[in-house]
Length: 202
Image 1: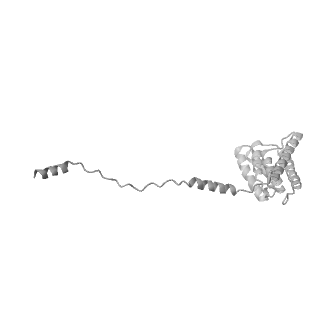
Image 2: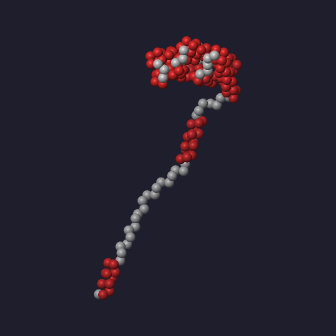
Image 3: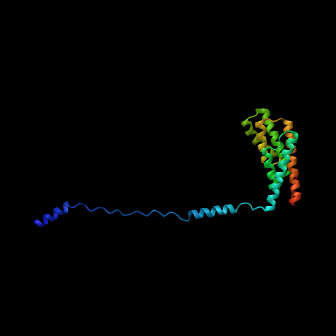
């Protein structure tokens, strides 16, 4: 009897056995191939770009641009007024580097630049010079070029310059027309020397 009592007391005094927690599902291991997949996607995106131009074409376009832009600088020095403005450098890049594009054709180079300048002067007449006028002029230039079918994206910057700086109307537009004629002539010369077709249309 005493043995049973001691056994019962020992059972009551013994601490409860610790509960064993069942481990949850293991966290998924990081995908070690993810960087490789991203690298492959980047390589495909780079490979999907335009074809690499021939070295001769690169050299010809670069040399043509240098000559045309230097001619603008020289003419500007002769008339004591700068002819080389940033939009014209962008125009020459299109004429020399992508002569087949609609943006590069003579009607777009000359017409787009002159229309954009006039858009800038129109905004000046209504609102005066300033950054707000420049923003409106750049947008109106785009609409004018679209309506006239003379798309030339660099010319929108010409409208911005006009609305910011308020240049003399006749002097600016006359010199701008001269500069555009120089760029188109450079494009014709480059086409004759390289055998490329320019213009695709007038």
